[in-house]
Figure 1 (cartoon, one colour):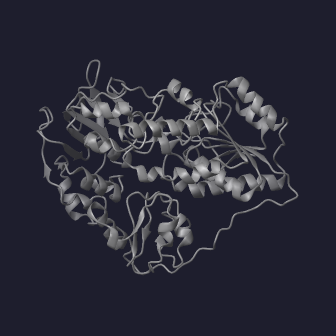
Figure 2: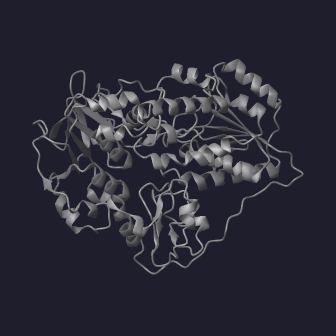
Figure 3: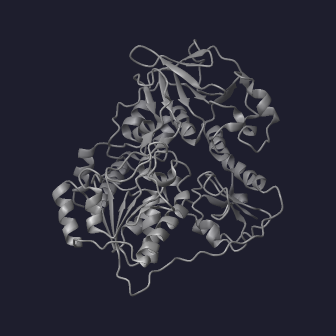
Length: 528
C-alpha cells in the first residue's frame, strides 16, 4: 500500500532525500519545486517503506489505507499528479560542504528567527565551526511559524521543533527584542562578524491602490493573521467583526486562511493556539458570509487544491460561485484536477449584493472582479467592482506581502527585496528567504534558498574576501546590553513558552499566547 502526502506538507523535501526509489516529486532540482506548496508521492513506484513519513517534520505523510474523511481525497491528488510515465531520472546527491581546517571559524550574524533563518543556521552548523549570533526584533523566536501560519494549522507549526534544535546549539547565541537597523546598525554587525545574513522576511503588505483603501475596517491580511496569532504589534481591536458580510480580496492560500477562520466554529478554534482576543471576537462575530474577490477567472485562482479541499470539507458550510462573468463555462471546461476543476460541484448563482446575506454561513467566490473603490464615509460600507457595489463591513486584502528596507542595506523598492546575486548582496552581507526572492513559496522553499546563500558565504570565506571582525565576541554582548537593555535570549524564550503552555493547560488549550510586549517581557524574565 502506497503512502500519500496530505494538506499539511511544508515542501521542504526532507522526504525526497530519504526516498530509496525516487517516487516523491517535485524534487529540489526540478523546475516546479518551490512553486508548489505540496509534494506528491507516485503510487506506482512507492514501495511502502515509510522512510518519508519518518523524515517528515510536519507529520504530513500517511499510508493511503489510513486516510479517512477529508484526508482521503489526498490519495487521489497524489495519484493524479503523475499522469505520464514514472520518473526514473536521478539527480546527483548533494552533500554538506565544509571549510578547510586551516581556516579559522567564522563569526556569522543571522537576522531573523523564521524558517529562512532556521535553515541558514542548520546549514552553517553542518558545514562550518562558525560561532553564530541570531537576532530578532520580536521577543519570541519563530517568525512566520509563530505569527504567520494560521492557528488552525498546528501540524505546519511542528517544523519549529527542528529549528529550535539548531537555535539551542552551543555555538549559537540568540538576542531577541533587538531592532537591527535602529538599536543596532548594519555597521555594528559588520564590525563584530565576518558575515551578516538577513532573513527578515516580507513584513509589509501590497496595496490595491484604489480610493477608500485607508477607510476603517480595510486591513491587510498580515494584520488579520497577526491578530489571530497574538502578534504584539497588532492590537486586540484591529479586526471589526460587527458586519454580516466580509470581502477578502484575493484567491490564494492566505485568502482561504482568512475566510476559513472567519467562518469556523469558535469551539473548534478553541482547540488551537489562536489568540484569546481573536477567539472572543469570533464568538460574538456577526460575519456569516465571506466573499472572495478574484481579479481573473477560475483557471487563474491561486489557492492550492489541498488547501481548497481542506476548507471545503472541514467547514461543512455552503460554498457557491457567483455568476458574474459566466464562470460556469470555464469551470465546466477545466481539467477536474485543476484549481478551476475542483469548483465543478459547486452551485453557480446570482446575488443581490445590496441585501443582507441569507441565513447560514456561506463562502462566495466571485471572479473577474477587481475592486475599483471602497465606499464609505469613515469606515468601509461597500466594495465597488465590475459595476457592482457589494455591501460589506470588513475588507481584507490578501494580495501578497512585500519586504521593508533595513537601514544601511541595499533595497529594491520595485520588487520589495534586497538585491543580490545567489544570496550575496556584497562580500560580507547576504540575504535569504522572502527578503531575497520575494514573498513566494512556502516554508520548505527556504531550504534550498538557504543552501544557496550559505554556499555564497563559504565561497567568500575560502576566497579570503571577508574582512575579519574588529571587535571581540564579548564586545558584541556588551553592545547589545547597552543598546537593547530589554533584550531577551533563548532561556527567556523558553520561559515564555512554558508560561504560555501553562496558561493553556488551565483552560484546556494547547497554549494561550501573550499578546502584548510587556506581558511577553514579564513572562520571559519569570523564573521556573
